[in-house]
Length: 156
Image 1 (tube, rainbow, N blue to C red):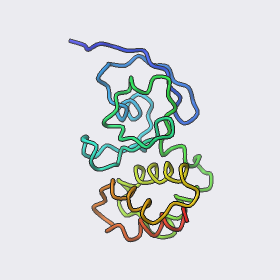
Image 2: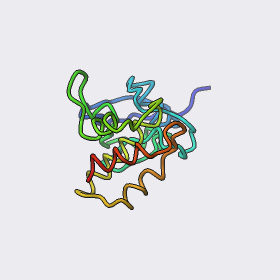
Image 3: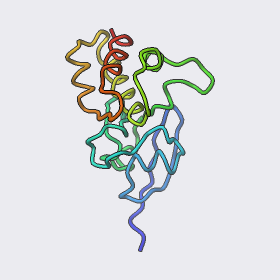
Image 4: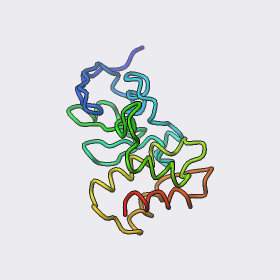
């Protein structure tokens, strides 16, 4: 038995999309499976790890906790928007590369998107604000030292 379907129209990384989706489809699954934007990673599926973080109308959200239907009429920004293929990396990506702020890279897209939201809100975020953002992300590889150094370098 198929669930209720919804028609949605949203803009993802500047490109308009109109789709018919199941009412219970998560935004993370819509991005990955319907639009092929696999940079948004799904880790815990409970909103705890932060790997699936995207911007919804400029606000950092866990896409595993948002239904695709809630993005109807909204602007969604994913990690793919940070730099075009074969283009230079943006300042956050460059800092992560330069400061070795990633190892396996699974958590990195979500961290980059949360830091992007912070940089959009604050021209010079404080150390406390950076710590607060990073506190919402789980990384099993780096111990956060290099992630924090990269965030400080890019945002301050």
